[in-house]
Amino acid sequence: MTARTRLVGDYVFTGTTTSEGTADEAGGLLAGGAVDIAADGRILGVGAPADLAAATPDGAEITLRNVGGLLMPGLINTHAHTPMTLVRSAGDGMALQQWLTDAIWPREGNMSPDDAHWGMKLGSLEMLLAGVTTSCEMYFFEDAMVEAVEQTGGRLVLCPGVIAALLPDGDVEPRIAELAGLHARHHNPDGRVTVGYGPHSTYDLTPDQVGRIAAQAREVDALLHIHLEETQSERQQVIDTYGRSATTMLAEADVFAGPVIAAHGVWLDDDDQQILADAGAAVAHCPMSNLKLGSGIAPITAMRQRGLSVVLGTDGVASNDNLDLWEELKLAPLLARGVTGETSALSAVDALQMATVDAGKAVQLPDVGELKPGSWADIIRIDLDQPNFVPGLAQDLLTHVVFAGSSAHVTDVWVAGEQVVADRSPTKADLADTINEARTRGTRLAEAVR
Ligand SMILES: [Zn+2]
Image 1 (cartoon, helix red, strand yellow):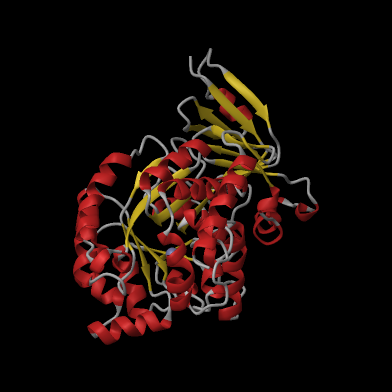
Image 2 (tube, helix red, strand yellow):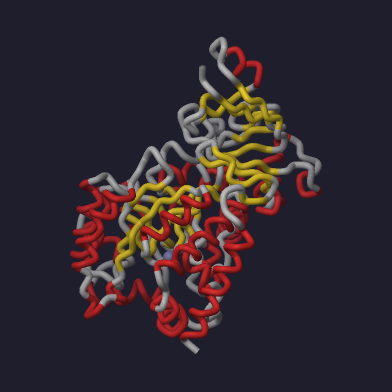
């Protein structure tokens, strides 16, 4: 006897498309489709209910839930520092370096593990309510972050950060020595937390340090998560110091020999893009953060033409100022079209894939981001009975989702088959309590630097 749940929608978008890259009833978008979820939280089947029923062994229990709406994979935020919810909007209007040293780092310097827990819990709920089921993080306070997502039900790719500028005498060796232990303690591919490695950047760490961290990551086949080419001045600083680009230098240190996600990539030149494409790395495009900090617009159309995987991230909320990946989902194609002058630069369906199936692969979760047998049932429901989704013809539905829809239309969310948001409310954690606690702690951090 296999306990299973069948979610029946008005439509199901699986995340896959036809060979032409479109999603219609021939590929990816199923009218009247359903998703069967096993008791272990993985997907058993996706398709027309009649077809699924035929494939069900005799005697299996099926709980039918006719939920309607559009069912699709949860969105994946590939670059975040979520406990920064406690310092949201701090230092707005300052130039990047002053912003870090005068507004952000003094507040973060006073952050306790308990603060990070509440900041992570708040941000995790903010993401789940927006249909963002996974975030790939670079931060500290690992135990507190894991505990927070265990309480909300979200999925976490935890990349413990290494920042020399925040350590006494810039000595990163004790921190580097901790990384393998953090991986061993928290990495659980059968659960909802996996662990990568998060060296901050090449303007903070030496090529040798990043190379040694990358070698550690490769030993356990873990993701390396690093900031790369966010600002023009950062690019110039690295070239002035080392005589070549950060990307060239990291390639020389064998950093791209394992899986890598590089955040931003705003100032990657043609050669850098080719190095990353050839290595199979991915760029976490964070257009909202890049615009807010005045960093520029990443050349993602050129990257994609080179075969470089581009996925989406919010970055920390002090530079965004929210964790609502739907905004990046809409902004990425708009910017790509505006910058190139080509409406074909990025389609709505391609943008959706960047936020789901491509993102799952980029953060080393190939079983996340796509609704297919064997994948985790990380699913969101979109309410189609809203003005924004009219007329709602099948051939336009996913364009509606990207350009007319928003996180406000996400009503229900499942992670590993467990419903973590029901009718726009978290099911596992108390939202009002979390807001109150995080507000008190964020206020204290702000007052300490006045
Ligand atoms: Zn960042």
